[in-house]
Length: 178
Image (cartoon, rainbow, N blue to C red):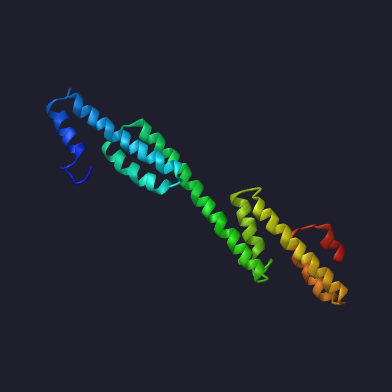
């Protein structure tokens, strides 16, 4: 479809304007349409939803009534949304790991591993990596609180217990430390 007026689509359309029954021109347009469909489907298959949507925008400008293109566009939009969600989950999991390594388990508010893992679970309930991460945070706090009690530092143990109850409200092991 580019350059304008000097492309196969324009030439086939001009021929059909002069000879509406011209089979070669009609077949040419059908081949162009099929080429768009094939390339967009390949983009979908390869996980390149954005590229497929750009291609379909061009295709739908010249074939606005094609139902197969409309259906393919819907599939690409769904895939694009899934890819964006997956990217957001991956970024949150990386952030949670960094926060955990920095000791930001439940603090500061708005910038801690617990909240990052919880955000992942909002996007993907049952996300195994987030559930494992929360489990690791729980064990880390339990171990630290137990160590503090064994060292004779009940104040630190209580602080860690309180932090653990933020992470796991009502957790029997944290409550037992109190």
